[in-house]
Length: 323
Image (tube, rainbow, N blue to C red; front, side, top):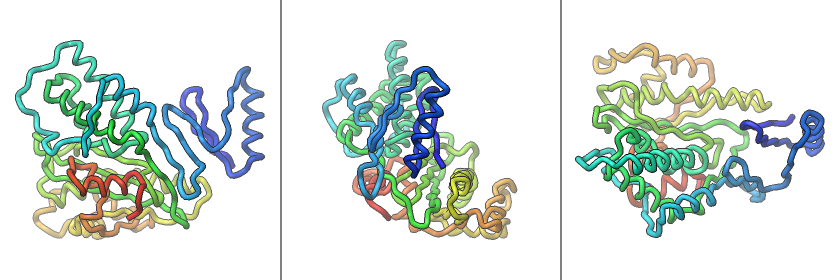
């Protein structure tokens, strides 16, 4: 079996069999006039460097992309975290001029591109900045430069990925209740096969919720679809049908998921569509487990965590250490 990842005319082909890779080369050469190949343990693909030479993990980094950003914006200082604790506050501040607005828009989405590929540790900051591109202010620009200063001090960081044996999906899902100015909550999730995040998300919930429990449960319902998709992908790749393990730090939300209905006055209003979690548990597709809050990696994807806690969660998120 070979696996082909493609983006327009760039192909990334992997297989356990050298013979299968050579057959894939022949197929491409017979179909196209010009094909350039790069083989070996290190590959540059879509501004990411993949390094398979390490015995215990594959590393993915975008050092060159980050260096280009910090050089272009003449960033020389560093920061400990990608965002200050008041990231989501929008104080009165002068709007940027038209030229500066274009520059802010470009920078925000370049950093979001980076966050979605090799640096999920900046997702909270870049998600906020991407919501400010229509009318950015000087205060918003300073938050973008703060994130750039953090990147300047952490250029060498990237993802380190490895998998459990037997292989299965583990997902951490968390929510920060009513943290936006419109009182909506923020959801965070990471999916891993053992070491490092193969997928990470950070987004505001699309509805207001009345309690932390409801925020956590809606976030759980919204995010487990990723875990189910990854489990199905692994099954298609020939791996065993282990249930995806979903970690959650709110015991009341876990009870809602396991029961499949609300038995308390405070949660009876929750829309029935969120209770499909129970069905997935019954089918053996997912298994929800409790995770202590201090070990909840997705916490750093729901709010701008500060200090030593951020550094510890970042290392778990990127795969520099294992929980």
